[in-house]
Length: 399
Image (tube, rainbow, N blue to C red; front, side):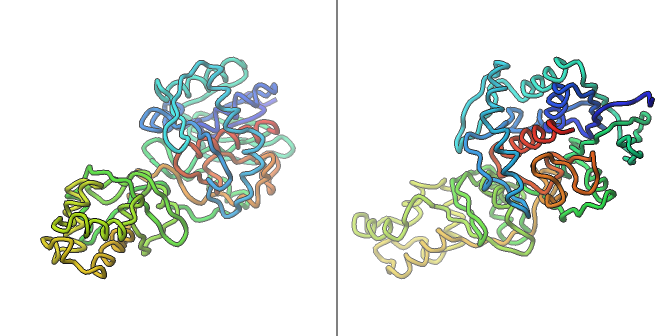
């Protein structure tokens, strides 16, 4: 008998790993969780500005991006947002609803991490090793796998890859999960940073730098999607929820449009004001709806030559042109801030080669993939955590 023998070894100690560990242990499995960092759940603690947006009230398959969009349905149906909310309530964790159905803890992300660790401890069957770096995973005839690590060798019937993606390397993001998948013959879709701010290198960068710290509600759109949420100007470019959301649907070299006044039909607004306030300047009208500094920058970009002309002296055609630009201002980012600040990694292990019911590899018995390492990425708003909980639950019933 191998001395370091377990039923299940989980690689990584993030949201999906800890969830799976306690649920598998509840079934009587002896579980070892391996984490290369010196602490568990670092990304949980950082999430939502330390408040942890742990799920969303409105979870639909459409909130997820994958080359195989139907893959998420089975797991999300069997362990829903309401199941996780129930667990949170059971532990007496107070939370609040913010816009778009986002649920955040009131007293900090540490409560979610403590809850998961408490559930692991309660089973008496979960062991967690930190500062334990995985070197190799090797199948052993009829006995599962041997996992070589920086602190020795371990053996288990099942190995669960819950190593996350490449986002925020300072919190332990790495590509080892993809390497293990490839080792066992899995295809890994190319990865890139998702839910990440845009950067610019053209004249528009000077504009965003000057406006740094200003936020407006705007619609960002391209041919694939559009999002109406806060847009934040930064020293490097554009951030805020609308930018992060659209970054999942953008590639280098593409442009997109910004509607700076999505709740106002500008052509009608201008024509009405032309009659009621003929002497007013456009910038004066627009500062009722946007910060003055933003209006002045847009004025320089769109109607500089008409800046000091009263609205009555501008032709309807000219007003229509200005309205059109304000509703669909085209920008072309040079890139994004990359994995350093990305909230998720797009791409990953091809889900057509993984069972949507059990999360088990179709190529290697006893090997499972859960969470972000898979080619599943959620929108901003608690969806990535919900995928962690749901995919972990699915696998936990079979490991």
